[in-house]
Length: 196
Ligand code: CUA
Image 1 (cartoon, rainbow, N blue to C red):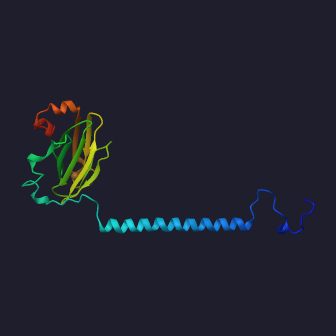
Image 2 (image 1 turned 60 degrees about the vertical axis):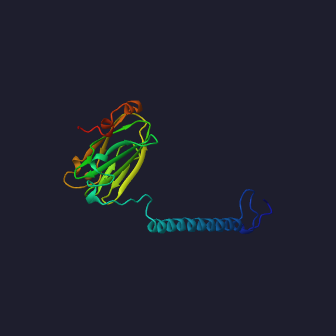
């Protein structure tokens, strides 16, 4: 580089070095790309937020918590597990201070299970650890969750929403039995494993 100018800004750039103008142009383009991405993401967030506020979650089912025991789906004789025509199992549970009714639910393994839970008094929690089940049980509404238990076993079902002085004692159990064993049970045995 014997012919180099004494002004370093006028010297030709060595191979592999991108001129400053090109760098500036590229950076401006990326700035534009980032701005557009940000605008798109903000639009999505705002639009879904407004949409969610205007249309609350699906499957909102209201129910009168004061007449649960008198008529309808959640009368006591209708609680517990029931086999549906398609072979799946429907479990209906009432949460109340400070118990779940029934206090022990029996379901078959490797079978689709739908839980329908409602509250007779205050807000309770419905959780079965090691499954996808984790929801609140709000008086006046029916919480519906679906799952399937791969293996037989005993599962705890604690209330995990503070609901009063007896909250910590509000527990129930799910007893998952092999599919064949469930099919051979009497209707009463299937319905619930709570002490009769
Ligand atoms: Cu029910 Cu805590």
